[in-house]
Image 1 (spheres, helix red, strand yellow):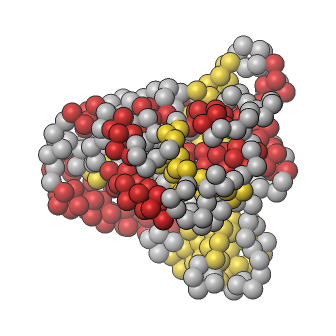
Image 2 (image 1 turned 90 degrees about the horizontal axis):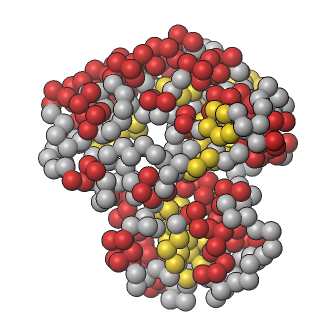
Length: 439
Ligand code: SF4
Protein backbone atom coordinates (compact mmCIF):
# COMPACT_ATOMS: atom_id res chain seq x y z
CA UNK A 1 0.00 0.00 0.00
CA UNK A 2 1.27 3.49 -0.92
CA UNK A 3 1.64 5.59 2.23
CA UNK A 4 -0.45 8.46 0.89
CA UNK A 5 -3.99 9.45 1.89
CA UNK A 6 -6.89 11.48 0.58
CA UNK A 7 -9.86 12.45 2.76
CA UNK A 8 -13.33 13.25 1.42
CA UNK A 9 -15.46 14.98 4.05
CA UNK A 10 -19.22 15.23 3.74
CA UNK A 11 -21.39 16.90 6.38
CA UNK A 12 -21.16 19.05 9.47
CA UNK A 13 -18.42 20.80 11.49
CA UNK A 14 -17.91 17.66 13.60
CA UNK A 15 -16.99 15.71 10.46
CA UNK A 16 -14.63 18.49 9.31
CA UNK A 17 -12.97 18.47 12.72
CA UNK A 18 -12.80 14.64 12.77
CA UNK A 19 -11.12 14.66 9.35
CA UNK A 20 -8.42 16.96 10.78
CA UNK A 21 -7.75 14.37 13.47
CA UNK A 22 -7.71 11.53 10.94
CA UNK A 23 -5.12 13.44 8.87
CA UNK A 24 -2.93 14.04 11.93
CA UNK A 25 -3.21 10.37 12.96
CA UNK A 26 -2.20 9.10 9.52
CA UNK A 27 0.70 11.55 9.28
CA UNK A 28 1.96 10.37 12.67
CA UNK A 29 2.25 6.93 10.99
CA UNK A 30 4.21 8.37 8.05
CA UNK A 31 1.38 8.89 5.54
CA UNK A 32 1.47 11.94 3.26
CA UNK A 33 -1.50 13.88 1.93
CA UNK A 34 -2.33 13.20 -1.75
CA UNK A 35 -4.61 15.77 -3.39
CA UNK A 36 -5.66 13.35 -6.14
CA UNK A 37 -7.93 10.57 -4.87
CA UNK A 38 -7.12 8.40 -7.88
CA UNK A 39 -3.42 8.33 -6.90
CA UNK A 40 -3.80 7.89 -3.11
CA UNK A 41 -2.97 4.64 -1.31
CA UNK A 42 -5.74 5.29 1.22
CA UNK A 43 -9.01 7.08 0.57
CA UNK A 44 -11.09 7.97 3.62
CA UNK A 45 -14.74 8.87 3.23
CA UNK A 46 -16.01 10.75 6.23
CA UNK A 47 -19.73 10.28 5.66
CA UNK A 48 -22.92 12.09 6.65
CA UNK A 49 -26.20 10.23 7.12
CA UNK A 50 -28.41 13.11 8.09
CA UNK A 51 -30.30 13.14 4.75
CA UNK A 52 -30.73 10.54 2.02
CA UNK A 53 -29.08 12.87 -0.49
CA UNK A 54 -25.84 13.04 1.55
CA UNK A 55 -25.90 9.24 1.97
CA UNK A 56 -26.49 8.63 -1.75
CA UNK A 57 -23.31 10.52 -2.69
CA UNK A 58 -21.29 7.63 -1.29
CA UNK A 59 -23.00 5.00 -3.42
CA UNK A 60 -21.81 6.70 -6.59
CA UNK A 61 -18.46 7.90 -5.32
CA UNK A 62 -17.02 4.76 -3.72
CA UNK A 63 -17.37 2.33 -6.67
CA UNK A 64 -16.02 5.07 -8.95
CA UNK A 65 -12.90 5.49 -6.78
CA UNK A 66 -12.41 1.73 -6.64
CA UNK A 67 -12.67 1.45 -10.42
CA UNK A 68 -10.20 4.25 -11.15
CA UNK A 69 -7.80 3.29 -8.38
CA UNK A 70 -7.99 -0.53 -8.03
CA UNK A 71 -5.14 -0.81 -5.50
CA UNK A 72 -6.58 1.77 -3.10
CA UNK A 73 -7.66 0.89 0.45
CA UNK A 74 -11.00 2.56 1.15
CA UNK A 75 -11.99 3.50 4.70
CA UNK A 76 -15.55 4.57 5.48
CA UNK A 77 -16.06 6.54 8.67
CA UNK A 78 -18.57 9.10 9.99
CA UNK A 79 -22.34 8.67 10.34
CA UNK A 80 -22.72 5.63 8.08
CA UNK A 81 -19.87 3.54 9.49
CA UNK A 82 -22.05 1.55 11.88
CA UNK A 83 -25.18 1.16 9.75
CA UNK A 84 -25.61 -2.56 9.01
CA UNK A 85 -27.49 -1.98 5.75
CA UNK A 86 -24.73 0.37 4.51
CA UNK A 87 -22.07 -2.18 5.45
CA UNK A 88 -23.91 -4.89 3.51
CA UNK A 89 -24.34 -2.66 0.49
CA UNK A 90 -20.72 -1.48 0.36
CA UNK A 91 -19.01 -4.58 1.70
CA UNK A 92 -17.28 -5.40 -1.59
CA UNK A 93 -15.89 -1.91 -2.25
CA UNK A 94 -14.98 -0.69 1.26
CA UNK A 95 -11.99 -2.22 3.06
CA UNK A 96 -12.46 -0.79 6.55
CA UNK A 97 -15.61 0.52 8.30
CA UNK A 98 -14.30 2.78 11.05
CA UNK A 99 -16.53 4.24 13.78
CA UNK A 100 -14.68 7.48 14.52
CA UNK A 101 -14.16 6.68 18.21
CA UNK A 102 -12.06 3.70 17.06
CA UNK A 103 -9.58 5.94 15.21
CA UNK A 104 -6.75 5.28 17.73
CA UNK A 105 -6.99 1.56 16.79
CA UNK A 106 -6.79 2.09 13.03
CA UNK A 107 -3.12 1.07 12.98
CA UNK A 108 -4.19 -2.56 13.56
CA UNK A 109 -6.45 -2.62 10.50
CA UNK A 110 -3.65 -1.09 8.42
CA UNK A 111 -1.17 -3.69 9.64
CA UNK A 112 1.06 -1.09 11.32
CA UNK A 113 2.95 -1.23 14.58
CA UNK A 114 1.45 0.90 17.36
CA UNK A 115 3.45 3.97 18.23
CA UNK A 116 4.07 4.29 21.93
CA UNK A 117 2.18 6.89 23.94
CA UNK A 118 -0.61 7.17 21.41
CA UNK A 119 -3.89 8.09 23.10
CA UNK A 120 -6.96 5.84 23.24
CA UNK A 121 -9.30 8.84 23.00
CA UNK A 122 -9.54 10.14 19.44
CA UNK A 123 -10.46 13.65 20.66
CA UNK A 124 -7.04 13.89 22.28
CA UNK A 125 -5.29 13.53 18.92
CA UNK A 126 -3.72 16.84 17.90
CA UNK A 127 -5.53 17.86 14.72
CA UNK A 128 -3.90 18.86 11.44
CA UNK A 129 -5.93 22.01 10.93
CA UNK A 130 -6.56 23.07 7.34
CA UNK A 131 -7.11 26.75 8.09
CA UNK A 132 -4.41 29.08 9.40
CA UNK A 133 -6.85 31.31 11.29
CA UNK A 134 -10.03 29.43 12.24
CA UNK A 135 -10.30 26.18 14.16
CA UNK A 136 -13.07 23.89 15.36
CA UNK A 137 -12.40 22.52 18.84
CA UNK A 138 -14.69 19.60 19.74
CA UNK A 139 -15.69 19.72 23.40
CA UNK A 140 -17.25 16.29 23.22
CA UNK A 141 -18.83 13.72 20.99
CA UNK A 142 -22.17 11.93 20.73
CA UNK A 143 -25.70 12.82 21.70
CA UNK A 144 -28.23 11.60 24.26
CA UNK A 145 -31.26 13.36 22.86
CA UNK A 146 -32.64 10.93 20.28
CA UNK A 147 -34.62 13.43 18.26
CA UNK A 148 -36.89 11.08 16.36
CA UNK A 149 -35.58 12.00 12.89
CA UNK A 150 -31.86 11.96 13.69
CA UNK A 151 -29.18 9.29 13.24
CA UNK A 152 -26.46 10.99 15.28
CA UNK A 153 -27.03 9.18 18.63
CA UNK A 154 -26.82 5.85 16.77
CA UNK A 155 -23.85 6.88 14.65
CA UNK A 156 -21.76 8.60 17.33
CA UNK A 157 -23.06 6.98 20.51
CA UNK A 158 -23.88 8.63 23.85
CA UNK A 159 -22.43 11.95 24.96
CA UNK A 160 -18.89 12.03 26.23
CA UNK A 161 -17.12 15.25 27.09
CA UNK A 162 -13.47 16.29 27.13
CA UNK A 163 -11.80 17.71 30.18
CA UNK A 164 -12.12 21.48 30.48
CA UNK A 165 -8.35 21.95 30.82
CA UNK A 166 -7.71 20.00 27.56
CA UNK A 167 -10.18 22.19 25.71
CA UNK A 168 -8.84 25.46 27.13
CA UNK A 169 -5.23 24.39 26.56
CA UNK A 170 -6.04 23.53 22.94
CA UNK A 171 -7.71 26.92 22.45
CA UNK A 172 -4.73 28.64 24.08
CA UNK A 173 -2.31 26.82 21.78
CA UNK A 174 -4.15 27.94 18.64
CA UNK A 175 -4.51 31.53 19.87
CA UNK A 176 -0.74 31.63 20.52
CA UNK A 177 -0.18 30.37 16.97
CA UNK A 178 -2.17 33.37 15.71
CA UNK A 179 -5.57 31.78 15.13
CA UNK A 180 -8.30 34.41 15.18
CA UNK A 181 -11.42 32.29 15.46
CA UNK A 182 -11.97 29.54 18.01
CA UNK A 183 -15.16 27.54 17.46
CA UNK A 184 -16.25 25.19 20.25
CA UNK A 185 -18.38 22.39 18.83
CA UNK A 186 -20.51 19.48 20.00
CA UNK A 187 -23.87 18.05 19.00
CA UNK A 188 -25.33 19.91 21.96
CA UNK A 189 -22.79 22.22 23.61
CA UNK A 190 -25.38 23.21 26.22
CA UNK A 191 -25.32 19.83 27.89
CA UNK A 192 -21.54 19.90 28.44
CA UNK A 193 -20.69 19.06 32.02
CA UNK A 194 -17.73 17.41 33.69
CA UNK A 195 -16.46 16.98 37.22
CA UNK A 196 -13.50 19.27 37.78
CA UNK A 197 -10.22 17.36 38.01
CA UNK A 198 -7.05 18.77 39.56
CA UNK A 199 -5.72 19.87 36.15
CA UNK A 200 -8.88 21.92 35.51
CA UNK A 201 -8.48 24.07 38.63
CA UNK A 202 -5.78 26.18 36.95
CA UNK A 203 -8.46 27.64 34.66
CA UNK A 204 -11.27 27.50 37.25
CA UNK A 205 -9.73 28.87 40.47
CA UNK A 206 -13.13 29.17 42.15
CA UNK A 207 -13.86 25.47 41.80
CA UNK A 208 -12.88 22.57 44.00
CA UNK A 209 -11.93 19.17 42.57
CA UNK A 210 -15.09 17.14 41.94
CA UNK A 211 -17.36 20.15 41.45
CA UNK A 212 -19.23 20.43 38.18
CA UNK A 213 -18.07 22.62 35.30
CA UNK A 214 -20.84 23.46 32.82
CA UNK A 215 -20.81 24.97 29.34
CA UNK A 216 -21.27 28.65 30.28
CA UNK A 217 -18.33 28.29 32.69
CA UNK A 218 -16.20 26.64 30.01
CA UNK A 219 -17.11 29.38 27.55
CA UNK A 220 -16.20 32.16 29.98
CA UNK A 221 -12.85 30.49 30.75
CA UNK A 222 -12.10 30.30 27.00
CA UNK A 223 -13.20 33.93 26.51
CA UNK A 224 -10.76 35.04 29.21
CA UNK A 225 -7.72 33.73 27.33
CA UNK A 226 -5.35 36.47 26.25
CA UNK A 227 -4.95 37.24 22.57
CA UNK A 228 -6.52 38.69 19.48
CA UNK A 229 -9.36 36.26 18.76
CA UNK A 230 -13.09 35.75 18.89
CA UNK A 231 -15.08 32.77 20.05
CA UNK A 232 -18.08 30.97 18.55
CA UNK A 233 -19.93 27.82 19.52
CA UNK A 234 -22.31 25.35 17.84
CA UNK A 235 -24.91 23.86 18.45
CA UNK A 236 -27.26 24.91 21.24
CA UNK A 237 -30.27 22.72 21.98
CA UNK A 238 -33.15 24.98 23.11
CA UNK A 239 -34.13 22.60 25.91
CA UNK A 240 -30.75 23.11 27.60
CA UNK A 241 -30.23 26.81 26.86
CA UNK A 242 -29.83 28.60 30.17
CA UNK A 243 -30.01 32.16 31.49
CA UNK A 244 -26.41 31.59 32.63
CA UNK A 245 -25.31 31.05 29.01
CA UNK A 246 -27.10 34.21 27.85
CA UNK A 247 -25.39 36.18 30.65
CA UNK A 248 -22.01 34.68 29.71
CA UNK A 249 -22.48 35.86 26.14
CA UNK A 250 -23.64 39.29 27.19
CA UNK A 251 -20.74 39.88 29.59
CA UNK A 252 -17.83 38.60 27.50
CA UNK A 253 -17.03 40.52 24.35
CA UNK A 254 -14.72 37.81 22.98
CA UNK A 255 -17.88 35.77 22.32
CA UNK A 256 -19.43 36.55 18.96
CA UNK A 257 -22.90 38.05 18.91
CA UNK A 258 -24.31 34.98 17.22
CA UNK A 259 -26.34 31.97 18.22
CA UNK A 260 -27.51 28.95 16.29
CA UNK A 261 -30.67 27.76 18.02
CA UNK A 262 -32.44 25.06 15.97
CA UNK A 263 -36.23 25.29 16.32
CA UNK A 264 -37.03 22.44 13.83
CA UNK A 265 -40.80 23.22 13.83
CA UNK A 266 -43.26 25.89 14.93
CA UNK A 267 -45.90 23.42 16.08
CA UNK A 268 -45.95 21.82 19.53
CA UNK A 269 -47.37 18.49 18.35
CA UNK A 270 -44.72 18.13 15.69
CA UNK A 271 -42.05 19.11 18.22
CA UNK A 272 -43.34 16.36 20.53
CA UNK A 273 -43.29 13.85 17.65
CA UNK A 274 -39.72 14.96 16.97
CA UNK A 275 -38.90 14.34 20.65
CA UNK A 276 -37.47 17.84 20.96
CA UNK A 277 -38.68 18.36 24.56
CA UNK A 278 -39.56 22.07 24.35
CA UNK A 279 -42.55 24.06 23.21
CA UNK A 280 -42.80 26.95 20.77
CA UNK A 281 -43.57 29.22 23.72
CA UNK A 282 -40.36 28.20 25.45
CA UNK A 283 -38.37 28.64 22.26
CA UNK A 284 -39.73 32.14 21.70
CA UNK A 285 -39.03 33.05 25.33
CA UNK A 286 -35.37 32.18 24.69
CA UNK A 287 -35.31 34.34 21.57
CA UNK A 288 -36.82 37.20 23.56
CA UNK A 289 -34.30 36.82 26.39
CA UNK A 290 -31.39 36.70 23.91
CA UNK A 291 -32.56 39.80 22.06
CA UNK A 292 -33.13 41.66 25.31
CA UNK A 293 -29.64 40.82 26.64
CA UNK A 294 -27.83 41.22 23.30
CA UNK A 295 -29.91 43.37 20.91
CA UNK A 296 -27.34 43.02 18.10
CA UNK A 297 -27.40 39.19 18.21
CA UNK A 298 -27.44 37.24 14.93
CA UNK A 299 -29.92 34.37 15.16
CA UNK A 300 -29.98 31.25 13.01
CA UNK A 301 -31.94 28.03 13.11
CA UNK A 302 -32.62 24.63 11.52
CA UNK A 303 -36.15 23.83 10.38
CA UNK A 304 -37.55 20.65 8.88
CA UNK A 305 -40.51 20.81 6.49
CA UNK A 306 -42.83 17.88 5.78
CA UNK A 307 -42.21 15.88 8.96
CA UNK A 308 -44.59 12.85 8.87
CA UNK A 309 -48.12 14.02 9.53
CA UNK A 310 -47.31 17.74 9.31
CA UNK A 311 -50.60 19.35 8.23
CA UNK A 312 -50.97 22.66 6.40
CA UNK A 313 -52.18 24.21 9.64
CA UNK A 314 -49.14 22.96 11.53
CA UNK A 315 -46.85 24.21 8.79
CA UNK A 316 -48.53 27.63 9.02
CA UNK A 317 -47.38 27.72 12.65
CA UNK A 318 -43.79 27.25 11.47
CA UNK A 319 -44.28 30.19 9.11
CA UNK A 320 -45.55 32.19 12.08
CA UNK A 321 -42.55 31.20 14.20
CA UNK A 322 -40.22 32.31 11.42
CA UNK A 323 -41.85 35.73 11.30
CA UNK A 324 -41.69 36.06 15.09
CA UNK A 325 -38.10 34.89 15.48
CA UNK A 326 -36.89 37.15 12.63
CA UNK A 327 -33.96 34.96 11.73
CA UNK A 328 -30.78 36.03 9.98
CA UNK A 329 -30.27 32.53 8.59
CA UNK A 330 -32.15 29.23 8.58
CA UNK A 331 -30.90 25.90 7.29
CA UNK A 332 -34.02 24.32 5.81
CA UNK A 333 -34.41 20.61 5.23
CA UNK A 334 -37.17 18.55 3.69
CA UNK A 335 -37.90 15.58 5.96
CA UNK A 336 -35.92 12.55 4.86
CA UNK A 337 -36.62 9.22 6.55
CA UNK A 338 -33.47 7.76 8.13
CA UNK A 339 -33.24 4.02 8.73
CA UNK A 340 -33.12 3.03 12.39
CA UNK A 341 -34.67 6.23 13.74
CA UNK A 342 -38.06 6.45 15.46
CA UNK A 343 -39.47 8.68 12.72
CA UNK A 344 -38.60 6.04 10.10
CA UNK A 345 -41.55 4.05 11.47
CA UNK A 346 -43.93 6.94 10.64
CA UNK A 347 -45.55 7.30 7.25
CA UNK A 348 -43.63 9.87 5.19
CA UNK A 349 -46.96 11.24 3.96
CA UNK A 350 -46.15 14.79 2.86
CA UNK A 351 -45.51 14.67 -0.88
CA UNK A 352 -42.18 15.77 -2.33
CA UNK A 353 -43.93 18.62 -4.19
CA UNK A 354 -45.58 19.85 -0.98
CA UNK A 355 -42.25 19.69 0.92
CA UNK A 356 -40.72 21.78 -1.82
CA UNK A 357 -43.57 24.29 -1.64
CA UNK A 358 -43.18 24.58 2.14
CA UNK A 359 -39.44 25.03 1.86
CA UNK A 360 -39.91 27.79 -0.72
CA UNK A 361 -42.47 29.54 1.48
CA UNK A 362 -40.05 29.56 4.43
CA UNK A 363 -37.21 30.75 2.22
CA UNK A 364 -39.34 33.72 1.21
CA UNK A 365 -39.91 34.70 4.85
CA UNK A 366 -36.22 34.23 5.60
CA UNK A 367 -35.21 36.56 2.76
CA UNK A 368 -37.47 39.23 4.21
CA UNK A 369 -36.30 38.95 7.84
CA UNK A 370 -32.61 38.62 6.90
CA UNK A 371 -32.84 41.67 4.61
CA UNK A 372 -34.57 43.67 7.33
CA UNK A 373 -31.99 42.61 9.95
CA UNK A 374 -29.09 43.50 7.67
CA UNK A 375 -30.28 47.11 7.37
CA UNK A 376 -28.76 47.73 10.81
CA UNK A 377 -25.27 47.51 9.27
CA UNK A 378 -25.78 50.11 6.52
CA UNK A 379 -23.23 52.95 6.78
CA UNK A 380 -21.74 51.39 9.92
CA UNK A 381 -18.11 50.32 10.39
CA UNK A 382 -17.99 46.67 11.50
CA UNK A 383 -15.34 44.11 12.39
CA UNK A 384 -14.84 41.34 9.83
CA UNK A 385 -12.63 38.25 9.82
CA UNK A 386 -11.40 37.87 6.24
CA UNK A 387 -11.62 34.33 4.90
CA UNK A 388 -11.03 33.96 1.17
CA UNK A 389 -11.29 35.56 -2.25
CA UNK A 390 -14.28 35.01 -4.54
CA UNK A 391 -13.95 34.20 -8.24
CA UNK A 392 -13.68 37.89 -9.07
CA UNK A 393 -10.72 38.30 -6.72
CA UNK A 394 -12.64 40.22 -4.03
CA UNK A 395 -12.11 39.42 -0.37
CA UNK A 396 -14.94 37.76 1.58
CA UNK A 397 -15.25 37.50 5.34
CA UNK A 398 -17.74 37.05 8.16
CA UNK A 399 -18.85 39.51 10.79
CA UNK A 400 -19.61 38.54 14.38
CA UNK A 401 -23.18 37.68 13.46
CA UNK A 402 -21.88 35.29 10.76
CA UNK A 403 -23.11 37.40 7.85
CA UNK A 404 -20.92 37.22 4.72
CA UNK A 405 -19.22 40.52 3.91
CA UNK A 406 -17.69 41.39 0.53
CA UNK A 407 -14.80 43.81 0.92
CA UNK A 408 -14.03 46.31 -1.81
CA UNK A 409 -10.82 48.18 -2.43
CA UNK A 410 -8.14 45.83 -1.06
CA UNK A 411 -7.78 43.10 -3.67
CA UNK A 412 -3.99 43.51 -3.82
CA UNK A 413 -3.36 43.23 -0.06
CA UNK A 414 -3.24 39.87 1.65
CA UNK A 415 -6.05 40.14 4.18
CA UNK A 416 -6.73 36.43 4.69
CA UNK A 417 -7.11 35.54 8.36
CA UNK A 418 -7.01 39.16 9.49
CA UNK A 419 -9.56 41.19 11.41
CA UNK A 420 -10.42 44.33 9.42
CA UNK A 421 -12.85 47.23 9.80
CA UNK A 422 -15.29 47.55 6.94
CA UNK A 423 -17.77 50.35 6.28
CA UNK A 424 -20.94 48.79 4.90
CA UNK A 425 -22.21 50.48 1.76
CA UNK A 426 -24.67 47.91 0.41
CA UNK A 427 -27.03 45.46 2.06
CA UNK A 428 -28.67 42.36 0.60
CA UNK A 429 -30.71 39.58 2.25
CA UNK A 430 -27.76 37.20 2.64
CA UNK A 431 -24.76 39.46 2.43
CA UNK A 432 -23.17 42.84 2.92
CA UNK A 433 -20.72 44.83 0.83
CA UNK A 434 -18.39 47.44 2.21
CA UNK A 435 -15.16 49.34 1.92
CA UNK A 436 -12.01 48.30 3.79
CA UNK A 437 -11.15 50.99 6.35
CA UNK A 438 -8.27 49.50 8.33
CA UNK A 439 -6.78 46.31 9.74
S1 SF4 B 1 -29.82 17.09 19.52
FE1 SF4 B 1 -31.22 15.91 18.23
S2 SF4 B 1 -30.80 16.67 16.15
FE2 SF4 B 1 -29.06 17.25 17.42
S3 SF4 B 1 -27.58 15.59 17.19
FE3 SF4 B 1 -28.80 15.13 19.01
S4 SF4 B 1 -30.45 13.80 18.28
FE4 SF4 B 1 -29.55 14.81 16.47
